[in-house]
Amino acid sequence: MVVLQTIEEFQKYRKNIDASIGFVPTMGALHEGHMSLVECSKAQNDVTVVSIYVNPTQFLAGEDLERYPRTIEQDLQKCQEYGVDAVFLPSNLYTSDEVGIKAPNIRGYILEGHFRPGHFDGVLQVVMKLLNITQPTRAYFGKKDAQQYLLICQMVENFFMSVEVIGCPTVRHSDGLAKSSRNIYLDANQRQRALSIYKSLHFIEQNITNMQLQMLITKAKEHLQIDSLQYLQITNYALQPIQKYEKNNTLVTIAGFVGPTRLIDNLWI
Ligand code: AMP
Image (cartoon, rainbow, N blue to C red; front, side):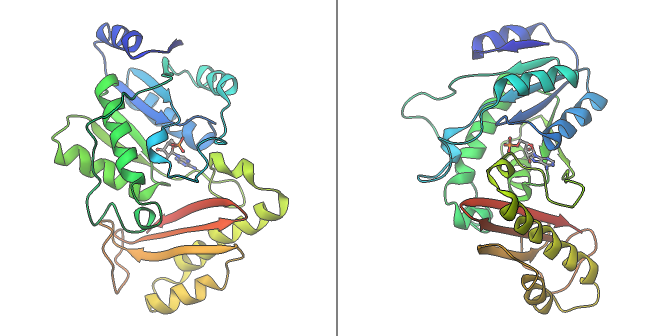
């Protein structure tokens, strides 16, 4: 496995590859969720590249950029164990006064985008940069970040980019809690209460065919033991509101705080 720390180094490495490349962008603190994307990439490509970069432009003022977990040594070890071919580890991807990318006015500013305005501008900007540097055949994203995955698909389409975007299912702990780099912020009590996010989603999944959607959301909220709920919404895969369950086109998204930690989860059903 090679570790490439600058854009120039990576581009030199990239020039010599004439095979299919699978690319997994991450912010590090790697867990089995990230590694499932690596496994998917390895199954579909000759070469797998992981990037680790905590992207400052997707954090809003007051969010956890400074304290975001950084575990580079363990991350590199995990990548080695899983057979990653190259890790791209840039220290900075920005210059001053840059051309930006603007998330779509509607889809980029509802749900996550409503509570984190500008977040997706930063996500799309860094993903555009990373895709242009790595020039992969396929790029892998977790459906855990549902809106992020959908907006990246849209950017690739809107800008006629040639990469194939692959969405991978959410990896969970055995009790159902979605794996997340931010779970390490949770103490035992918070971890237990965070599980209620999954329980409410599970309740929705069990009852979606036999209950009116507004009633279902009201009932699902009763399962929550988190400190504050930002949203619990049911849309279709285009993020438009729906009145009735549509098989394989229904997305349930939730976000809220447990203590100071913001968690998100979702169901694609
Ligand atoms: P992050 O390091 O949080 O930016 O995540 C990097 C990639 O891993 C994103 O595409 C995430 O959606 C994906 N990811 C994070 N957690 C999970 C999970 N539990 N299951 C599947 N993919 C995940």
